[in-house]
Image 1 (tube, rainbow, N blue to C red):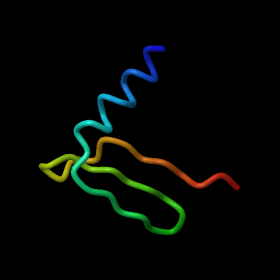
Image 2 (tube, rainbow, N blue to C red):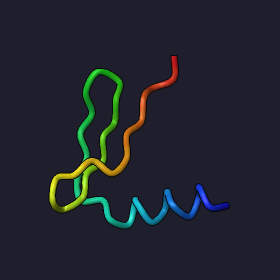
Image 3 (tube, helix red, strand yellow):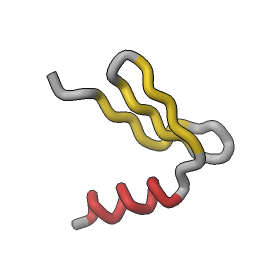
Image 4 (cartoon, rainbow, N blue to C red):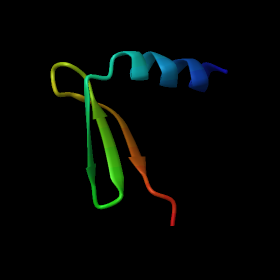
Length: 41
Protein backbone atom coordinates (compact mmCIF):
# COMPACT_ATOMS: atom_id res chain seq x y z
CA UNK A 1 0.00 0.00 0.00
CA UNK A 2 2.83 2.43 0.79
CA UNK A 3 4.46 1.80 -2.59
CA UNK A 4 1.20 2.50 -4.38
CA UNK A 5 0.74 5.74 -2.44
CA UNK A 6 4.32 6.84 -3.26
CA UNK A 7 3.76 6.08 -6.95
CA UNK A 8 0.58 8.15 -7.14
CA UNK A 9 2.20 11.03 -5.23
CA UNK A 10 5.10 11.02 -7.70
CA UNK A 11 2.72 10.91 -10.67
CA UNK A 12 0.87 13.92 -9.26
CA UNK A 13 4.16 15.88 -9.46
CA UNK A 14 4.85 14.79 -13.05
CA UNK A 15 5.30 17.56 -15.58
CA UNK A 16 6.85 15.79 -18.56
CA UNK A 17 8.15 12.48 -19.81
CA UNK A 18 10.73 11.10 -22.20
CA UNK A 19 10.94 7.68 -23.88
CA UNK A 20 14.29 6.44 -25.18
CA UNK A 21 15.40 2.90 -26.04
CA UNK A 22 12.60 1.25 -24.10
CA UNK A 23 13.01 3.45 -21.02
CA UNK A 24 10.37 5.86 -19.74
CA UNK A 25 11.54 8.76 -17.58
CA UNK A 26 9.03 11.04 -15.85
CA UNK A 27 10.24 14.41 -14.60
CA UNK A 28 8.87 17.13 -12.35
CA UNK A 29 8.48 20.82 -13.25
CA UNK A 30 12.15 21.46 -12.41
CA UNK A 31 13.36 18.73 -14.76
CA UNK A 32 14.28 16.34 -11.94
CA UNK A 33 13.72 12.64 -12.67
CA UNK A 34 11.02 11.36 -10.33
CA UNK A 35 10.17 8.00 -11.93
CA UNK A 36 12.00 5.67 -14.29
CA UNK A 37 10.66 2.53 -15.94
CA UNK A 38 12.29 -0.07 -18.17
CA UNK A 39 10.40 -2.14 -20.73
CA UNK A 40 10.02 -5.78 -19.82
CA UNK A 41 12.07 -8.16 -21.91
